[in-house]
Length: 161
Image (cartoon, rainbow, N blue to C red; front, side, top):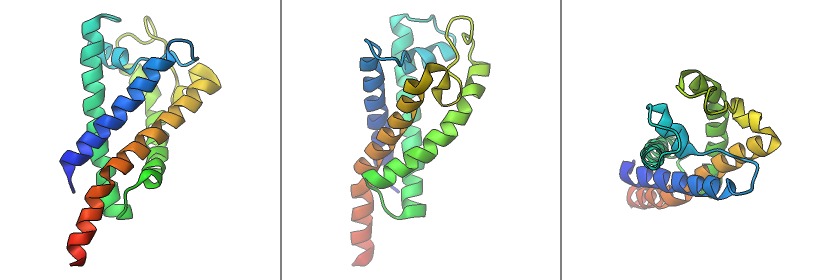
């Protein structure tokens, strides 16, 4: 397994998710900031620039670590990585993460006083929230799968020789 490539793939997938969420805050119905969520999770002041920077770094590190888990699955379970396989992994990821959201809300110091709980699968944000949650996990998985794909292709070529 190429853990370095997997970590970078996860970070790039996470950066794409963050960029889309950030751009959606302007007028779209998904008012979620992962940077603020993660930054305030460790007790930083809501909506401060430093909170957003620390929170974004935390999210990208987590996204990188999850990318390594995806790579483990590509290597051990499917023996293949591409956009489609990554998107299927994204569905599994969304199913698990969606169930964990209420648990994280229970331990977050600012939910519900300052930040609104989003509920499982972001259902508290309505159909747009659930759709965005699923779409962003599919996008993340597809991104990780497409970036990690060459690592598996090279391994296949070297083991076939």
